[in-house]
Length: 355
Ligand code: KG4
Ligand code: ZN
Image (cartoon, rainbow, N blue to C red):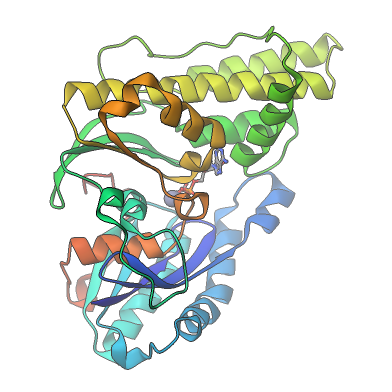
């Protein structure tokens, strides 16, 4: 089955064509990130206007890129309905509704957070219609625990099969990505903060100097699977301001602060995810969402002594951040089309489908 996915929940306009939920035939992402870099964060109105400009060219491009696929070969459409910015979501949803009506195709509404998890079902290379299915060892095994870490969400879920997702914990306040982004802004590193902090932290790591800064690891020892990144964000920002006012602030300080912020966030994410994996006796551990592109997080999971008990899956960085291939994949494995007239945006959707 060939599904055309559409994703416009935030500042990426994306379309992708995926066969049987696993084979990416084409995958196009246009980002308005450079506009948001100027303002140090996303202005929803600006993001929505960019979505309007990009949506048709992006869909056209993705059909063009998928060799041999025409509108006739597309079996269904899938679109992100939430969570996300209302203005951005509307562009994708209205476009998908219109195409479903005009092309007479089934339309599947998709939860963006669940879609992130399905990046783990996609074969890792792109644009090859003759690409083989992923080898069986690369397909997630149920039951599994999935960590979803994005700019606005941090959730841990237990998945027993494609239709059974149980929320086991999540952030009580800020998301991990928010902590990266806000600390980066105060450090003067710009938007998005995650990759910028990661680059500074890497420079520090190569110096091999003893880390003088210590930030808290909130809730790391709690038995539950909740997170709290707001206190860490405040502690990080206070530390940055303190060092700035002491006139001890230079490039090395920025690198050291970045390193410790990244260590604190990743320590908590790894510890709690693996504790959940142990408690629920899962077969696989899946990472997903923009923060899962973080190389230190990937390295800590991969090298953890307990990880040998599980199959660890982490999508390539380009499939961790927002894309539409994951939208087409989740729609294939959870194929529930709804008449286009009934599909609406759901900006406040949670990972288990509550509004
Ligand atoms: O999933 P995503 O692309 O969009 C949302 O659904 O929010 O995630 C965006 C978040 C941002 O907070 C960004 O700073 C973070 O993912 N991010 C990273 C990295 N790449 C993106 N965080 C840490 N390290 C990275 N390499
Ligand atoms: Zn996302």
